[in-house]
Image (cartoon, rainbow, N blue to C red; front, side):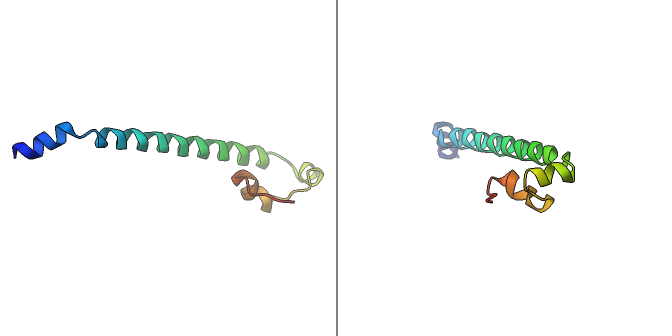
Length: 70
């Protein structure tokens, strides 16, 4: 039992793993917020504005994901 407790106390990999996971989660949430902001802005446009930009509502997901090509 002492070796298990000793092994846990000396392990820094767990702390690094949680920190890296937290960073990845924060980056993911920031990406989702930005995607939602872009989609919200696009959904506010009327059809005339969309036609002027030469896009349709079917293009919204690709635009928000950054994979839209003309």
